[in-house]
Length: 86
Image (cartoon, rainbow, N blue to C red; front, side, top):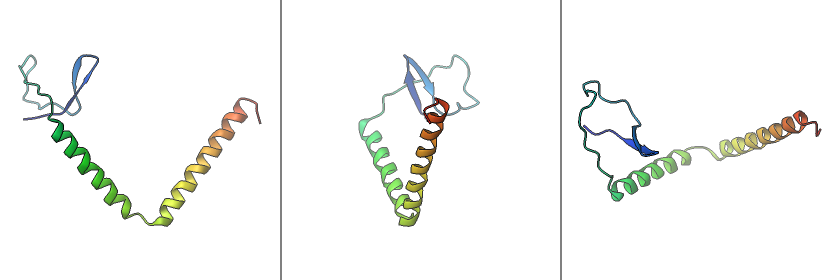
């Protein structure tokens, strides 16, 4: 069985739950991923994202961007008010 893990501060940490039948102290083999595998996964992910976003109507994109602008404005106004600048 293969699980995904990341290296953080010199410690290998799983990014998903370990199989329940694995025992404490059990020896495991850790291999560095092949660059081709990672590149292929990223490429596939990018294609999936592109395909998903292509299905969103242009009006929704515009509405989303407008909402982000409004949120940013409101946030800045709130901070200015909190700091006594407005």
